[in-house]
Length: 64
Length: 271
Figure (tube, rainbow over the protein chains, first blue to last red):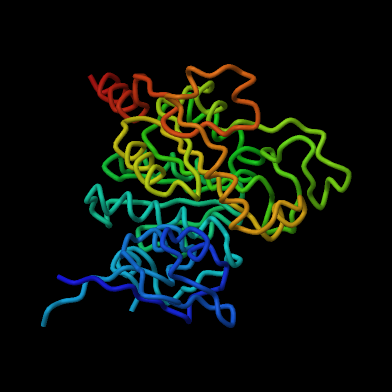
């Protein structure tokens, strides 16, 4: 099972918590919404744990 | 499609919630959902009770048996639910104003009875919904819309208050320390008796702005840098703990549980 980082921009309020606490600094804000700015994500899920709006999370991809 | 956890435990049609950008309450509400998921509890055997305030909106967003009650009275409603249905896991989500001001008496007497319920306090140190008035947990000297020259009151330590009143489990988590807070909520739910987990939330809109302490990132960075685990705090002096927030499990005691005592008295009366 592979994992991937998912962003739901419709729910993002642009607070910047995920950007500040990402240990690999892979996130940034653009037009007050979170974006992935480089490919250094290690899928640790720290962003998901602290997103107050459930707008970013690590999802398991099925192999089908 | 939201994350699996959110899909399972939240009423998606009501999301995104109305809490402000960066409000710590969303993080803490997720912690409650994760704790329930980790414990593998039956969703239909949980009753979530809330009062009035920003925090209390959680009962509308979370998908359990839920009841959004009157200001300060969440514990009173929860007591009735627990006595009628002792098989239910009763969880109360309340704010600092709701639980320590208008609901202060319900809190201390439910703690004194040691009735089996879990109270998760979303403590943002201010009345957010009504416009930023100071609450029973606003630190001395801090500013609020009703304390334009600084708050002269001393704040309540809600966890210590509950412990002193007879709660058999107390703990403190924060919005920043999500894995710890999830663990403490799990312990509180598993604990038989009155358990209270005080969770330091962040209110960037009123508390942060009024006190020039910055937004959510700054407020959570403060939590990251100034919290001390309870085990470590035991070996620290009063001076060393000045300006620190003690987190982790704070007390655990073995007192008789209220619904069990109540059942016994019914059996005794019937003999």
